[in-house]
Image (cartoon, rainbow, N blue to C red; front, side):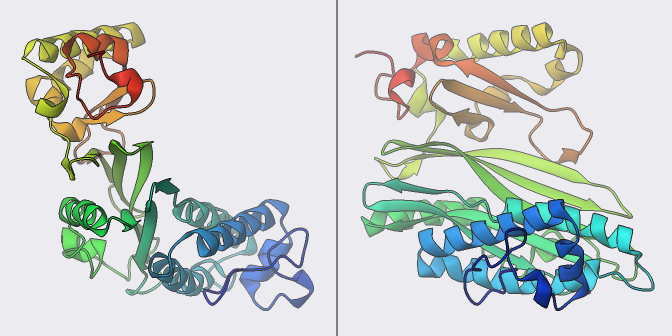
Length: 327
């Protein structure tokens, strides 16, 4: 497994390390299970890719969190008196899968700029705590453009406030003596990245074995030409678009059989909120019920083709070519 000092090199067709030299109970379990070995290989491959593709400042966070995560993994999933081997295998399967997802940090080039992921985490309150925080960051030139975007990300994601940990910033009480794992994750997905628009979705997720879980989603849309967040006034002219969007969304939800509860979570405030909108090649996506909610709470993501929005869009809207009406 990658140890945080350098990208792992494959010396085995099954795992990322030589199984004949397995030095821990965790490594022994990985070598004895093809699925675990495949996950270990995936983690090593992603770690190596990030070492190759990220700038040194961004990779430093990956390296540090990988070393910390490995210590947590050995403390949490090693078989012993309190954990049978089967439970250790299940623990490893979940932990390795989660880590592979955490290392899936996208990198996109935009001229002289690079949009890349940064990673930080914490496992400091016993083996029961796991925090993973992934956030987007612009590097390269023009430096002023990168700095403007990064300031906005820092503000939206409260990076200074969360520097000492997600649990601490959210004031979530921790009880290390309670069995099980408390997990807090933030991550993001790219929907559109070009020289006009960065559109991405931010997620937060918290779940504890002995407690309740919740999740949030929000959109971040950045006008890269003007170095500022995208507003609804940048996209739409007039006010007719608001009701048109609501009517389309409700019709879509009725078709899907979801309108009974969803009608209560869509209104003018929702469609006026830039944090509810995502943009990709084919159209927009409206996020409903995106604020903090139970993992079983009501939410919906409704795709809206650009053809529906075209009559209301401004010609200069910072959208993909298919999303801009002709001048």
